[in-house]
Each structure stands twice: as structure tokens, then as C-alpha cells.
Length: 368
Image 1: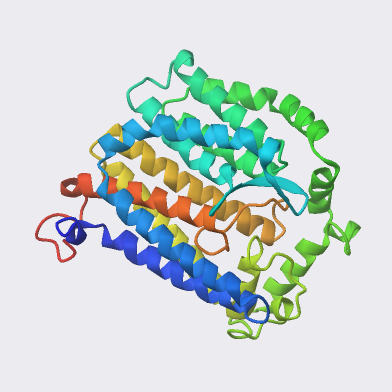
Image 2: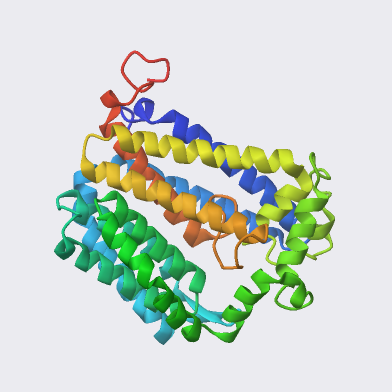
């Protein structure tokens, strides 16, 4: 452990700690007039997540490769148990009560699926349709199980993640174009399988003012909060939309609106810059990885963070339909945060094992 400590990728660690600081400050502002226990629980989740990240960084990638398939199978089984014994919260059955552990299997499956695909394609040619069959079926089964909860947003994230992994593994572009060509059929089937409230979200996205006190309320209040923040914001703990509880789910899905209202455009751009630097650093590590397995893992992690960030901020700004996707390291939630930090540990390990190939991390560097 002591030998590993000075060899960590400190660029990645500093960016992560900056995001942790922004997230905890924003969450405190979102809940400071309500349930303070939420903030303390998030602080505990950060503690647990950092311990998980530290342990994960110690595990060599060759050992991780041996654990991937059991982890994926277990997460898939847990996901299949949700419709049977899951807890119902806010009209959806997404959680498993496992005694001291309250787990959301859909968060777990997103990462184990990505790792399974990275392991699968690391030693196979992604240009062969037989190679694509198993991971594609696994992604479809996972997405269908998540849709049943119902959780359309997470199911779409799983499908986007899987498509990204297929592309980086050598997926033929003509196959992708063929899938795009038949996608209207899939969208038609999806529309008719969606719940009424999910269809209403899509319609409200197209015209939020059609139901300003119902389905359009979330987006309208969110855009008011963002716009009222102006350039420099109203100041920490001085946001009116969150303080007067106009913002729905202000500590989870819509926490970006809290930050934009109190910190203005400047705070929003700083947060976007931090995410851009984090994702860029992960991709840089992927490009320098000494194994295809490590490169695919890093690419998958960067893709997931990009999807999370783009979808969450897009829906808060009214550019995308409202779906339940958290903002990485900022939104409240234990399952999402711990799995994200576990994913970062894999990037850390890849950087450590590829240390001699990554600029600014070689022996003799000021950061070495």
C-alpha cells in the first residue's frame, strides 16, 4: 500500500476531490432547510466509496478479470429479483432491502455489464457478429429487466453504454447504420410499451407549457432556477427556488439547478470544466494503457460519466426528457456514488500498471 500511494494518478485524484467538494457543498445548500440527515448520509457514502476505491486500486487487473463474470451474474440475478421482492418507492420497484444494505441493482448492472463487455472484447475481434451476440443479448436482457421496474432512463443509459462499447471494440459501421435504419420500428414498439406517465414526459419535453402544473412543472421550475442565477448567481444558501421548495428532487436529479441558481453561469461552467477534465484524463489513461482490457475499461468508464453528465444536465435545462439519471459525484445517492468510485478505482489501477507509458507520471516527474 505504501509503495502504491506515491504512484497514484494524482491528476485524477485532485479532480475527484474537487468534484466531491462541489457536490457536498451543493447538497448542503439543497437540504439545509430540510433533512440534514441526507447530507450526513452522503458524507458517509463518500467515506465508504473512498474505502472501496482504495481497495479496488490495490487489486491487479488480472485479478479483476477473474471476478468480472461472477459479479455480472450476481448483479443480473439481483436485478431479476427486484420485481419479486423489491421495495416500492415513489411508485417504482427499484430497490432490494438486504438487511443493513439497501441496494439498487440497476446501478450495479450498469458497471458490471460494462466490465463484462470490456473483458469479452479484450481478447476477441469485435468485427465478428458471433462475438457481438452474447454481450448484445446481455444488454437487452438487462435493459428489459430495468424497464419493468419501471426505469426507462436507466434502461436507455444501459443501451447507450452498450452501443458505445460495441463501437470502440471494432463494431462495423455498416451494422450501426443498419441498426439506425430499423430504429424507428424499435422506437414505435418502445412507445407502446411505455407507461402513461413516461409518454407524458416525452410530450411535455416537446411542449413543457402544455401542462405547467403537472408533468411540465419539473422542467419549468428548473429552467427558472437556472435562468434566475444569472452570471454570478444569488450566493451560497441564497437560492429561492430550492429554499422555497419549488424545485422538485432538488437533492438528486435536479441538483444542477441548485448549483446554477446559487453560483450562476460561472459555477455551472466550472463544474462542466471539471467533468471535461476528468473524462479527458480517463481517456488519456485509456490511450496509454498497456493492455486492451485496461483501455476498454477506461473507455467504458469515460463513456458512462459522459452519458450521465450529458443526460442529467440536458434534462435539467429542458433539452432532454426528464429521466432518473444522477449527476456524477454531485447528486445524492449511495448506490450510484459507490459504484462510480469503484469504477474510478479501475482507472486508477490501469494508470498505475501503465505508469511508464503515461506522461507526467513517469519516474522523475514532479508528480511521481
